[in-house]
Image 1 (cartoon, rainbow over the protein chains, first blue to last red):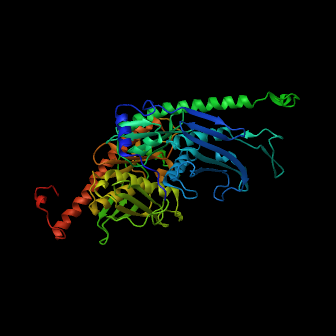
Image 2: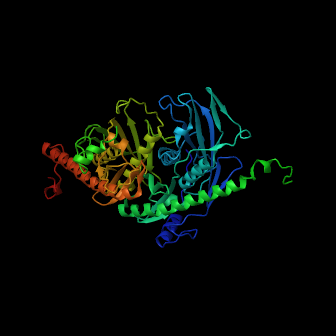
Length: 293
Length: 277
């Protein structure tokens, strides 16, 4: 099993000592994120998130399938994560590492179990036909904090996604192509976002947001908090690591809430911009003979 | 069926007749397997868990991928001059109401294993055993809520039995809140130690703290809950962990005293003035 090269002792000490003096290697504040960029693809449901040198691509797709026998009234919603060797030599194809398992569990809990997508609206014919919505998360570049970037990408991709319009007439289900009928957005209930704190120091007294890969390698623990802008916690995961004071964790949650509101505004704003870009001015404008050439 | 909120408000009693701040009956034993380096058996209500610790010993052949041996394994630490803590969890098919097969790579089990491994690795003095491995094997015999808490407690006890030096007990328990996330009432009571039924219906979290301190080693919340509700739940959870630590400590001390009385171990020199009651 290939392993990621560890930073040298000098490097580790350098990072930790700098953090103890409230300095980070890239000159950020301890609770500051790297520049976050969100772009959408030409197709519906493709979101590309860049967080510093971390880059995540999420693509949402939908197909008509048979619902699970035990949930005839629900559609199917899956999130598939893939950390390929192009991200880091420590990842192998078809062999999920612990990082990947934890990442996919975290996305699952944050987006799926919190009921962000109304799966009942994906049902077409009870017990026979339903939409199966699938989001594929690809990590293109790994420089720490995959979780927050991946979660943002998934939420953005799903909110950008449009599924083909359908109609039922006399027991016949028709799925329309985009040319026949404008595709419809998913029924989206709330937008959860992850905020990951990394802890440093002997007692985990230094809490840092958006750790880079180097910082992730020397941290003593981490805590991922998922919230939506209404102040509802969707998930908290501090899976072991150095114990951290309970009061400090509560403060972390409050700071996370402000960050989540920023993310929420960013996604709203980018979605509005994208909608404007796609809006060509209606049917007549599309039929014009003039073009950009 | 949801937790009968109407009756809770009338009598302030939960479905199993407990008050909000009561733990379920905890029964624990250590040294249950004579051949193992360390072993324990723990019941929290109807949640029953067995744990066997092997090691610190020479690491076996290099493991591939995530799974270590049996189903649902995960490791922590191990890099450099530290012992690696490898945790494997086996959830018996008969442990819950619906007989469900848990596959080898079940993500939930892997997550549980990784959590237990990371929580232990931070408390055990792994730096004393370079290039070695501590194998923790957990078996879930019966599930009735608070599974992660029971796993952590059982693993802690087994590590104590194995004589691996550690900073303090890692004691865990769960806490919940009486109303669902949608109801924004301020009168919601926090609850201690959720059973399966409460876990299904109500928001809850699992807390593990290190010894008697307020320092949280594990905090897992998997349900939707208002942020304002967290403080109360966490406070009750941390308090429950302190109670749990007392219980675990009593189990270890009782066993130690009995072993001295039976003459299985010789009374150490310093033990006379040590408080072994």
